[in-house]
Image (tube, rainbow, N blue to C red; front, side):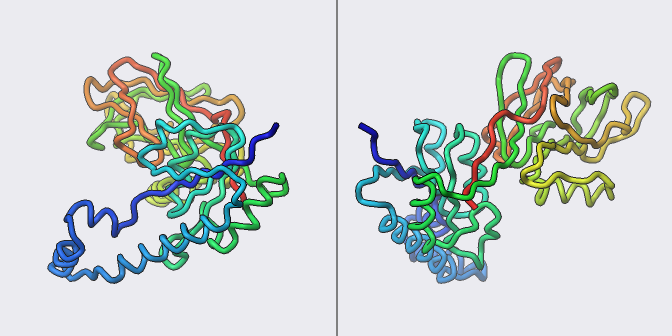
Length: 297
């Protein structure tokens, strides 16, 4: 007998909840903000909209379905089932947070506050939840697959990301390494490099490309293509700047061999605490991941 579908609702603490956790009471939080010319009522209003979205979603999930709600901090230890329907309620970054823990499950992004959140990865209003859940369960949902990026170290560690992977120094000071792309190899000193997907191309990668006045075409979200960009490469007698940007497609691999005794690191999607160390002599190989985010659009 087939089990009913399971809706996995993923959230993160609102700014209001984070303030209460830090200051203990509403009045302490209010005092803290007002001494800095900020207002608590705006933060509370966003919190109420988030709570309203979660309430609407709770009513939208059919009573016969199984359901569970988890926080962003619990993602690493949560066991997803193959047929889960994942509903991310919050900001775009929440979808990036959950994507690396999935293996093909559908993701529905609900935006509780369109005036505050961009809504690229959480494009749907909460009142769309009933129709979206039914379509996902019945195989009728319109799905957009988004390319992801992986980095594999020579000791077997693996990092997966939806937006981009950063390679450099933990303090963002000068990082030394050798970079290899196709037939080119170069020793470099820079403030690090990123390898971005089409999803990440509208964020950090776009900012770096603008700073470099780069002519490199950045990929679109569904393109089976990655772009790498080196931040502030420094020319010297022992380092160059000629392998500062390029594309990775198909079986292409970008190799980075560390020359950092301490502080060498990789992290994905801007989450620096979830990092992998890259010590002297270690090699990171970055390429298109086999996993793809399946986003209900």
